Structure formats: C-alpha cells, structure tokens
Length: 150
Image (cartoon, rainbow, N blue to C red; front, top):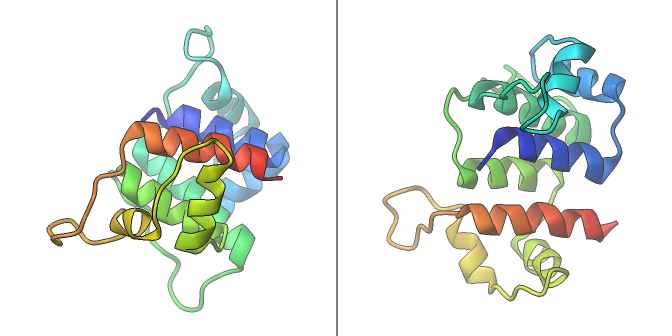
C-alpha cells in the first residue's frame, strides 16, 4: 500500500495541522520540516510530491502511538526499515487503543463483515497456522472506516 496515502488518511481523519504532524514525527524520533510534510501529503502526480519510505512512516506511526498513549517507559521503540500492512494495522490498533471487536465494528461502517477471529489472524506472527496477510483492500477500507468513525 502507498505510504503517502496512509499518511494522508491519518492526517485528514484527525484533522492534524502541519505543526501537529511535525510533533508526531518528532515524537517518533524523526525530525522533518513543514515543507517535507506538505510534499509527503501532496497528490501522487503533483510536482512537489515526495515518496514516504517505510522507515519514515514507521517513525510517524511510533510518534502517533506516543501521542495517543503517552511515552513508553524505557527505551523508545525503533522504527522498522520495512513495513507491511499487518504491521501498519498493528501500530494503528495500538495507537488508537482498539480491540479486535472495535475493528470488527469499525469495518461494519463500510459495510464489510469480518469476524473477530479473521481480524485476530492479522496480528499473529508470520508462520503461525492462523496468520493471515492484511491485503491493501482491507487496510484501505479500515482507513476509510476510521474517517466515518468520528
């Protein structure tokens, strides 16, 4: 899934200003500028578009967790250099303090039915017999449903 799309979705869902986005990145131990944020948020075909790599998105999601839940005791979490949809969904679940039942309810808002067991499979370790890969469509619909949750 496109990292810039994920960043845009979160920003517009929670109506975060450029300053708030800067703060979230810095809470995730990454310093950036307003110009960079505007370039990350630009449409994919815009002249100033700048792709957001996995590591920068991981910094942002770690900062979102810190913003929503407070700083973690001990060492700050390290930003992963590679993300997949399962890890992105897990970080959003942690940041928003969601349960599997909450995710099931959120998905109903976009007319998608999932059982708690199906959702729980996204959070299993790869290799577990019940592990399930989170596809782009699920993550996209989850982000869209978050926007209707408010």
